Length: 385
Image (cartoon, rainbow, N blue to C red; front, side):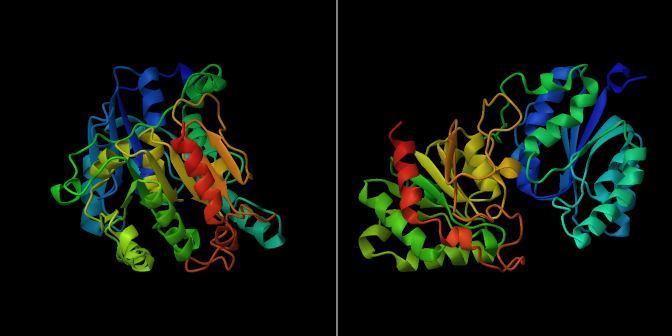
């Protein structure tokens, strides 16, 4: 019996136990599943504090939150809450824990399988072989699995292919426009709203890790140029200490006249409020981080600064794109729909390592060599449309 001939599920659980950006990129999968199963009830399991990207999503009846490091009591409570309540679990992350949740919760499963992305050296081959062994039990409990490809396959394509088993022709998944569903917006907090002047451009300089950072002096040059063009700048930041410090450092480099035309949101906005802010912007410029994906989903002209990360895997999806791959692996500038991705020079770009030293605190020469003029030219193009 083929997977697409099984009974249509009445209750489906989506599992995404990672960061907020990983939650957002599941929304095309959810939308496509709704087309398949219009009468099914959809629930979503993810980490506490990471599910704001689903606010107001019309397809999700219930969200279930868990700690990223649950204690035994929480595991037991979650076990009894989930146990065999669902017909199908869609496991969108390759972690053992995500699969265990799917095994506990549902009668049937489909899931993403991880692995080492390069597999070139003997050490890499050994890692790949170990990964194959770790994946064996996951394959055994699934109707259908999709392998991760960190270079050639876009993460949204990866998620959508989880539904391939339920199509007679899996390529039909990519024959119509595909879009990311942004969270419903909330009113911007008054302290920020009272300072807003149109037109404005949102800037989000803070990534989760240092190796995705763009140099401070480059932000200074960019913000000064934006203000000189007559725009207000709104600096976005998460409440994380390093994001707040980064914004402070950028502001300290600006001359007084430029500084007067910059608002620092200083972590004051929730994800739904950030969505409202971005929707009202003329354009958005940000690094490789979840808020950049949110900006693209809000249909705002989005300029994304990419270093080690392959845009073919995790570039912000241009809403309405038809097909399974919007981007090239390497291009100094590429624009698809409302999204422009900029990369620095070098044959090593993108390496998919954690910077040049392959650690979270590393610098990335490709970002150091992505000069402000490249961003300014992209911004000029985006705002002149």
